[in-house]
Length: 93
Image (cartoon, rainbow, N blue to C red; front, side, top):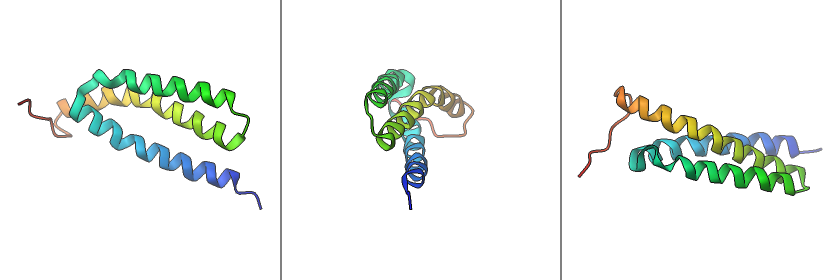
């Protein structure tokens, strides 16, 4: 049996699941000014995925990179959700 596809599927699910709270907590504590961290992480992961020959690791890095880029948009959407009152806003001290 070949488990590569199953491993990629489960890992993709976990990677996407990891980015969800990263976006929420990142926007809560730092606002949208951390978008560039997701951009750098995305570029690094995509470049690394192009340089790795192993299909499993290359695919997982590509998923990580795509999730990083997607998170940039979600970061700004999270800001709108906070403004609408759907998520708590951090009090400035």
